[in-house]
Length: 483
Image 1 (tube, rainbow, N blue to C red):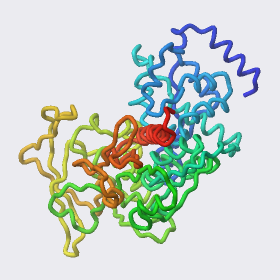
Image 2: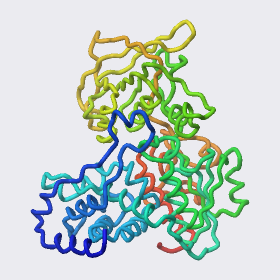
Image 3: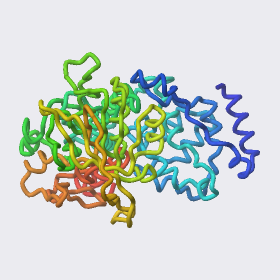
Image 4: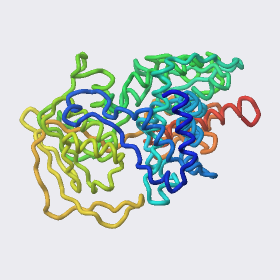
């Protein structure tokens, strides 16, 4: 779009009253047809066009006290970048986002904006759809990548202080980016053979392409961040080794990679696996797609859980050629913690939702392989501590369903390798690292932590917010001044 057209759009928008702007319908994300996309691993959401982005940006009402910013864990200047899109300066929009976010193209795809920034949009108070902040963030980041390529970044002057990061997931990458911008020499140690953590092994490419993650990581390399793969802190090297290597601060972002199971009869049968293992084999090791790593499959697969990981597992199973995928969740569809978009996509693709049911036993064949599951029908009772109504068994309502494979996606626990290897590091009853909420500093003075190793399981953007707070806290401690 040329500058004359962009200026015309701004002038037209400036003539619009707030009422006229609220009358503009929220943009609809273009996507692959469900019948087509279940046969490929390409991204489902195709991204909005420049024209769509500029019209959507014009819906922003220029609030004097923009609450959308308070809903963003990394504090993006949301009105600022949206105004830049509206006037056609997409490069400036992307630059505005990158002032506070190290992974804009990632966040624009997988963050639950509907529960965070968009939930605070003033449109929602007027019973109108919120401005599509997530779509616009994705547009700005994608536009810069597609039109400007690898924007050359001059690393800031180094201050001579080395800091280490354990884990290359979203919290670690966010911390690394902020510390590099402050002039620190940052080295990220990753246990696996690819950089990206859960962004690579946990999220399928039809939601978050690896090329997008790699581009964001390359941006951190330009800032001067160094990445070391295949290095397990606590095994390959120790906390004491990091001190001997000259690191003055350590950020732990090792995630929550231990799967949880339900401890029901038959759970040790062959053919029952965690969503972590299933997705890692396929996403990171390319099982079933030309890689050497094997993965179990079958005609009928049951996925247990109602979160985003359960949706990812279900939709991945369909793309692996499974004829029937049944998602079993003990509450109602309305109470599923997964994003509404992901639930809708799963249903469109053919995932069967068996809500208000809970597995109580798995049955095996003579070879020790799962052949069926027994599920208990549930009904909703009184609210539990989280505010959701507790599922209660319906007496006598038990059903047996033949299955060839069961994928359990009912939560994760923190990886204990790092905490167990550092004397004096305080952990909670949930085995998470205990930190000061404001600075993310642990009981060991030079160790800070964030993401799932602190939260026990959360979103990408919350982990990134932890990384930013930890960077500010560590920099203040190392420099002896408020930063």
